[in-house]
Image (spheres, rainbow, N blue to C red):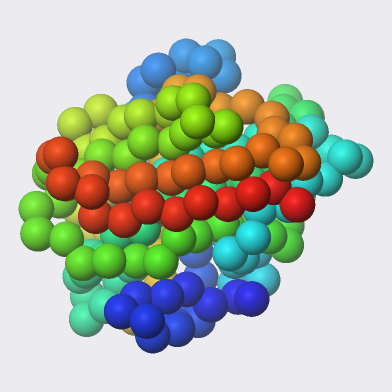
Amino acid sequence: MNSITKNNKQLIPSKIICVGRNYVDHIKELNNETPTEPVIFMKPTSSVSDELRFNSKDAIHYEGEMCFMIQTGKLVAVGFGLDLTKREIQNKLKSKGLPWERAKAFDGSAVFSAFVEFECINDLRLELFINNKLIQSGGYDLMLYKPDEVYKEISSFMTLEDGDVIMTGTPKGVGKFNIGDVFLGKIFSKDKLLIEHTWTVK
């Protein structure tokens, strides 16, 4: 399924725009350089899924992220997303200075919860639990480039359409997963739970 959901209405985004290296601790985790401007890459609509699938052929890592839906030129709703990454392939591509699409844009590599409206973007944060253990946490205050800054930067060279999604990067704690693992992603506004979603790896 290549659609996303807001208010029980399904939408098909024209594109998924992603931000890499947006949390300092994650940058250190992967021994990357800190960027001087947002690192932008894209996923096609064919990458969108509501299922989390294991692939024994490639070393796939999860990356939990706050994701924003665009409508009428604004960030109107937030959801929990998993940016799946073929890490070994990505490392090889990076070492050669090549694009990341083989590692980032494959089918099923953008896994989303439903999207919900929010009031104050500054108060948003995420938590990711795997098998009942807190693995990732982070939010607006830890981002190098805030969602509104990212939206402005992307809009400077690309038209953003209703239903498009911006994935704003992942905090530290990324890693591999296995069949049967249970993922629970949560988005909070301060201490208020806005949305949660559970995936069991197939």
